[in-house]
Length: 626
Image (cartoon, rainbow, N blue to C red; front, side, top):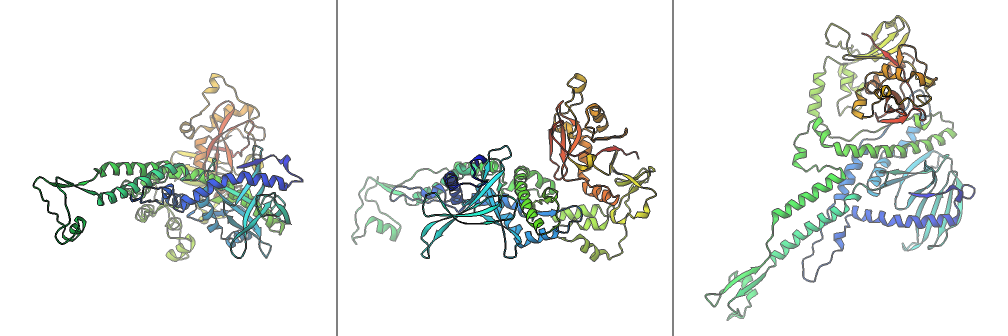
């Protein structure tokens, strides 16, 4: 990452001298990027190895970099990224159309591959001939973003380099496009001198029209950390073939005799080629081949060890490993892909940052054209893992749920069904009736409930729940999971804004210490939000207005709400409440006097936050008695 001070800018733009300095900085990074591309293209270090004249010199390069890049990028973006939004936003379809016309799915795959290869992918934005926003992938070896030196590292300008060539494909210079927050400025130069401006035009993206999709915090590729192991693997396999060739061309040593031409004038070599025999003139004479002993078992062990280290340290499984392919059940596959999944979680977070910048630029541009769109942060971005599917196992699981869930819901879980609504209508017709769950008569069944002001609860069955099912106004949404039950308020506190949890830090006395849970495993098991909230009430943010029997959920309680978020949001929408946002939400589970756990309701990420300084949303809950 190239970082500068904004004070170095002139009227918000870099001077030609600053651009020249930045390009010198990037030239050093370019050497590393070109080396990674060479490895990806099969030009490994072994390709440059030289041996003495006459010695066999096989130089075998193995496409392990290509395998690693294909696996990690395909696993991340093999399934197209989906975008969703809550509410009626008339311009959202226009945004989706712009992404589709830009082939955003293909661009995402290219960016993921570049990030896995170079440590970053680069995307730029432009307006087409119809003045509609478009996006494209740029070569990471010729494009980069310069950031400021604040803690946020905000983009200052982007740079795109293009070689100028004549009709004979001879290099005649370099074009440099500098993309600031308002202008695309064009520069040229013939050599390494300071570039000169040749023109400019204003863009309308409201920020730097270029973004980098980082692979990780270090901006390193997925195989970059195992390059030395790949070199060792190439050398070992090449030497094995060289040794075999030398064994075939072994020297013959004759002891106790001198073999000369025979009466027909044939040399020893000619006679061996023609007759495959050699007569020795003396009884004690002998012939041997001069060879070295090859230990194939030791070499094979070393090869397997190197290969295992490459896959282990790159977090990419070896799909040809018999141990990997032994059990293909869903749980077994998840366990075997655990390392890759952890790698993907980090890659996805960094990729999501790039997508957020993309949405900000596209939304800004389309709003200027009169499109009604939400803030980019309010647009949901959904990744789907490109996992192998055991269809027999899925079929058996869905069969087990038959009679316990609506047919439409089950049909939607079939891997090859893209539109559950159409598939369900095709199979069941238009008059499908809700399936009554076969549950014990005692108690009420698990599910989502509409809790009315008069205390009655109605099972919420989405499209089968009608307005006339209710006897009074809906006051809350109930969730029952076995012995667990909780009521969820219809609205976030503080009108849905992010707020601090407390006005100051809590105490640190022995009685306070008993309320703190600093270990993750204990925190997700905490189910006593009422007790936790009582410990916070004296310092609770006054914007959080809780009735006596309402409280802030514990981490365990909020996590159970998160895993049922889709159904709860459907019930909230039905009850004319506000849906749970894909944002950070406070829990009442404290980690210390200064911090508490909070949960991101878009992907389930759990972290601790400073409760008197940082902001998150709050959704109150209460006991659901059944």
